[in-house]
Amino acid sequence: MEVFKSKVVGLNRIFALISHSKKGHNNRKLRALTRDRLYKVLNIPDDPDMPQYFYDLCSQEESVLDIVVKIGGRFFN
Image (cartoon, rainbow, N blue to C red; front, side, top):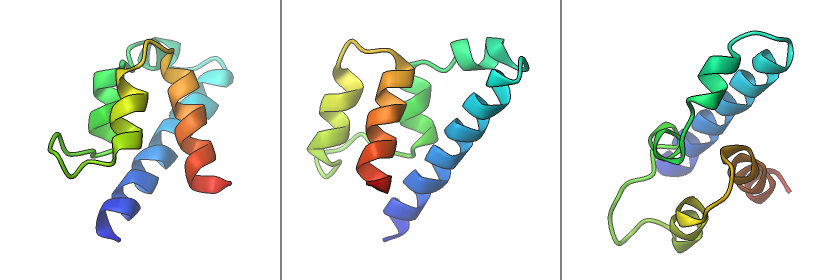
């Protein structure tokens, strides 16, 4: 449960950053948010116990925004 909470906190940070950037602020920060940083913000451990879903999603060649949308849908649908 603690890991799940940390991922939700990470998601909230990302969504807040995206929401803020839509207002014309911090676009540079949003562009700098690479998959590796998304991985760290979501606090996903790099070990065999990591959910396969996140491993597959983060290893795909998709934009960070697409990844965030998919992860958000997974948590909030």
